[in-house]
Length: 103
Image (cartoon, rainbow, N blue to C red; front, top):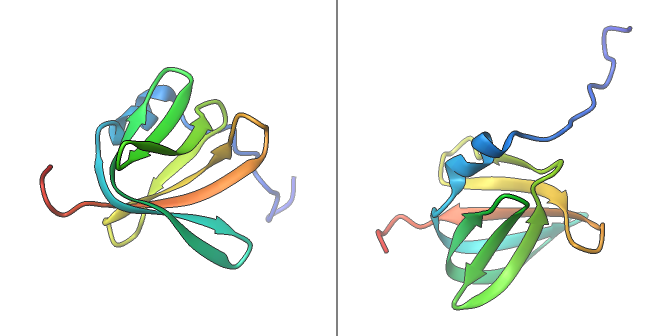
């Protein structure tokens, strides 16, 4: 094992993911390569047993499997970085910015 060996990320436990359940978000950005696209505004994060769902304005904007998913708070503390796979098995990378107003 070398000094810079890459550690395989198996994802987070369901208990760790549930820390973000019911968090209000102001907007959600989906990242593809170097591009970012806003996919929703004014919504909430829901963490179920088998999936992470973000709803904005009554519409589903993101659905990620909890198996292998990673959610990390941004250094600024104003959002969460989400990485995982969707229902089609495609890799997803999104950032959900927390709402500063109580909803």
